[in-house]
Length: 336
Image (tube, rainbow, N blue to C red; front, side, top):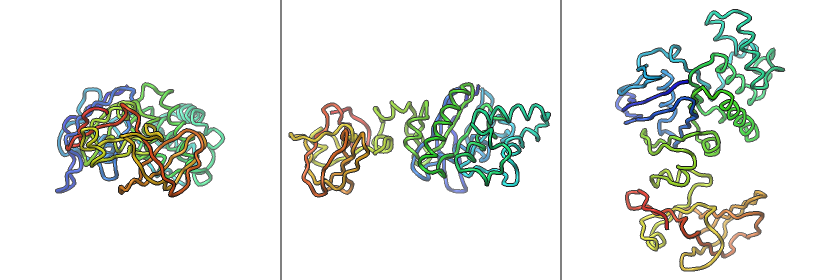
């Protein structure tokens, strides 16, 4: 098992500071997910842990040892890339076995390790095929299998599902979740921009913004108790509705946040009036997009199939106690 500790880590590219004051403990056996908007530094942080980027200042420790100057191959880390990075002229078996051959393992050891990983990832029927003969999801599983056979202390995943279609993303996400359960001694660090991946896979999520950590916590903690307006608006799908002005003033706040599932159709002094823009019926739930005169529509989630028509007048009201209140600096000041 591996415990990682980053202390006051900075990363500069010339005059541009990409990572600032990164202080983070990643526990042994934990599944940590890095999320944040494009350009926030999440992939750079992952590559810094891998040793593919040098640390400008600060320390990275793995199991109590500072590894700033240790080569990537000596850190006990395996990385799974977005682009698969498979050798097209090699079979699936040979792709997965390549690193083991470089380590000088015997043919029988390599055979055992590759076949075990192939069985675990449901790749056994494809071991003799070339990568070009596989689907995107199968190729990504080969890339994961190539990491598994090395028996690393730490797995790093850099947006591994972003090239897959929706159905393959779901299937491969489930495969990664099962992998984590079966390899509970391995620490996994995962970069994604996908909210569903973060919320369903993570033991804890690290939210990054402009190269700094905004908040670290379990998916439930970040969703239910965001420590800033930024985290409140970033975590969740659909994202939290953000309202200001006179409506926020009713709750003694500069800004209020309303989750789609905490808003119902109704009237009252806290109600919000508008017109329906569009209704998305998903079967079990429906999302109603309401024009309230603001730049972004208000999103309301209702159970079952709804039949609201475009331009239909509607009045909605938030559930008491589920109105997130924020002050002028974007800090939470309780719920209303």
